[in-house]
Length: 98
Image (cartoon, rainbow, N blue to C red; front, top):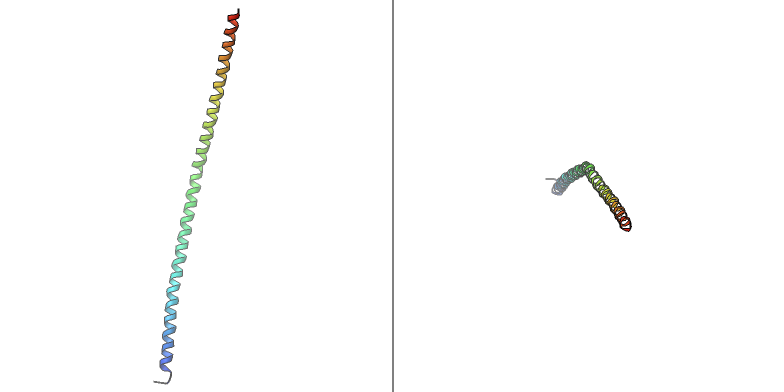
C-alpha cells in the first residue's frame, strides 16, 4: 500500500462518522421542529376553544347582570310596598285622631 494510505483511510472514516453524526443531529432538529409545529397546532386549538367558550362566558355574565337587575327591581318593588304600608298607617293614624 502507498505511504499514508492508512492515514487517509482514518480521515475518510472520521469524515464518514462526522456525516453520520450530522445526519443524526439533523433528524433530531427535524423531530424538534415537528414537535414545535405540533405544539403550535395544539396552542391554536386551545385558542380556538377559548374563543368558542367566550360567548358562553359573556352569556353567563349577562345572565348575572340581568339577575342583579331583577333583584334591584324586586327591592324597588319592596320599597314601593313599604311606602304604601306607611301611607296606610298614616291614614289609619289620621282616622284615630278623628
